[in-house]
Image (cartoon, rainbow, N blue to C red):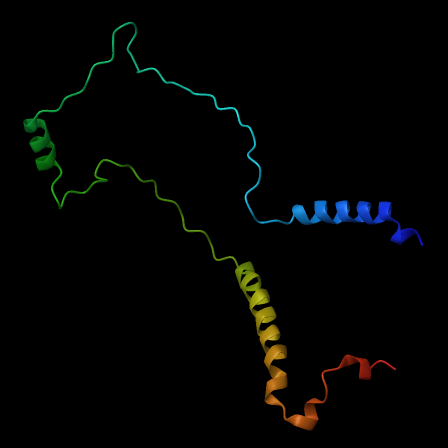
Length: 130
């Protein structure tokens, strides 16, 4: 028979080995990757070199005094008032449909647990097909 020939057995072994090797969870062979290094230049103002910013202790103390604990951080922010959106009754449908599906799933899952012995009958569906 054709399946018992050594060439067919070898081909089947190679096929099964290749298929099974794709399912391995171990580390794979390293893949060569190219890495491009990007260097960023310091920001400058025209041709002048970038200046280092230093803050004195007096400036830090003055900033701390300005930002007191009770101060409103949004004091200068302008907020425009909008009219509230009207109630959309579609939200009731959007929420109730998944809730009803969940209740139906729970009911049919646990309804067999509430019935006693002979009322439930076997859970083999082959008896119904005749």
